[in-house]
Image (tube, rainbow, N blue to C red; front, side):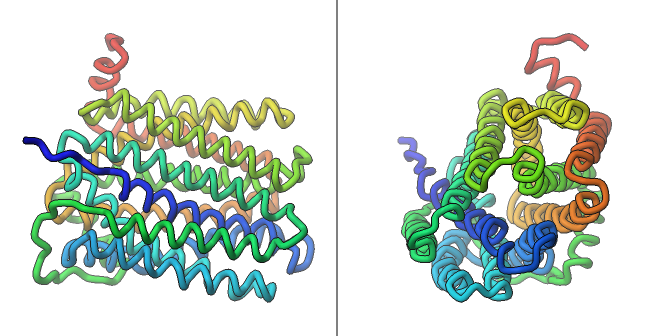
Length: 412
């Protein structure tokens, strides 16, 4: 008799963690900008993003090491427990209006999420089996972006509240953290035996070089997938940061309205990842990639050329986000399907490390471009990066044309 698969604890623990990450980051962007001198908005946004991703750069190799040498279920549980005191610490920064404390809190939340990430993705195959990889990956990605949605939206609403704002922040942090820990208690999977020891280097630079060389020898396309996902995150991060400036300054939107637009963007990405998983069904369909890439490129190009008002802008940025979601899932699913055994933990940590190096680069790039050229021109750079990403993956990743013909019934 086939055992019933219980995805819910893993899905919810992931969703609530992403919710807390983005609630904290966006509260910093919406509220703490008023604690510093005017004109420094881009710097605060850049720093909040930087402190969130820096742990991934420093500790992703260690997270991969833990996913190989310990039970992944235990890692999930310990990480979710650690979230509670971290959010209490971050709340203290809001209470006393101290930018240094909230930024340190952001760093520790990034660290907690970094340690958790290889284990949560590694559990997908061990909970659902090989045939559920695309489904599990698609759902994780959809709920990740739903967490971005709710965290961003609630941060916008809270930042516009005057009475009892500080206690609303505390209650929100605690409800989400404690609920995430409870969900972690119920994550169950039949895991392969952890390795007794691992001689992997925990130096991030050495880790990247070693995994890059391993990929060249054993699975060359892994490097293309990692670069593709890293570029996706660079583009997505720049869109998110740019909206925090573009929506209030160019479109005249309030924090709550900006949060709504950003939440709609997150819904659109989540919907794109879900649809991508449904189209693929039980297979990894890289033919979906060019469809997502073309949609992302054209949508951001139109924003740059037309410079539309708030309603048309919202529609176009949602279309860009939906297209990005279509593009992302086949890359994640490819990794799940093609990297076997405990090496998957290393591959995911390698991917996370490169992703967040690119996100850190995006923070600096955004700060420079927005300051010098303004938010509209940032969308032109995003368009060019999206075009590069699409062409690169179509050329380098095997089977894209064949998969495209199969999925969309078009003869090439």
